Image (cartoon, rainbow, N blue to C red):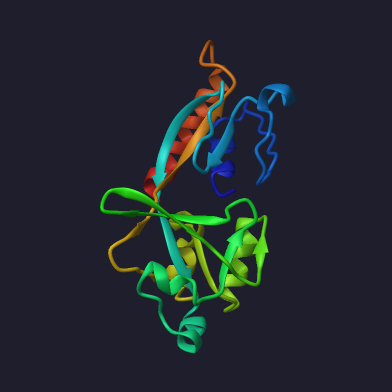
Length: 186
């Protein structure tokens, strides 16, 4: 959201229509110029352009860690309440250069990243979110990163998904470049 105001100020002729969804949409059928996705890409006929990398992190509130202890391994995750996104039943880590998938259990799951972050800040458990999702909370101390031995969370990227690569309207190219420049500064 903070990127929209400067984009419009710099480009008075530009119009932006935002549709915010956590679900995968048919952008061709809906006539959407560009979709932004922060998730592993599925096979598709869409054109994908990487905007920036966006590391995943495991995080928790300091209160949760004080009450329940700090996990140090993948095995420890099974002894903790993990808050997960409904469409992400497993967390992926990289161990020795290879993906390792862990099924996550917890008392709360939600279909919205913002809500998962809020629940995590309330001390309801561990969450795996992207660094962009929790940067402010890390800076304020509301959340802290949980680093596990011998693994790192799988990186994600922010992607622009386009219905075609041919004759992109200038407004689409402008939007993608503005988004890339702003996110690289983060």
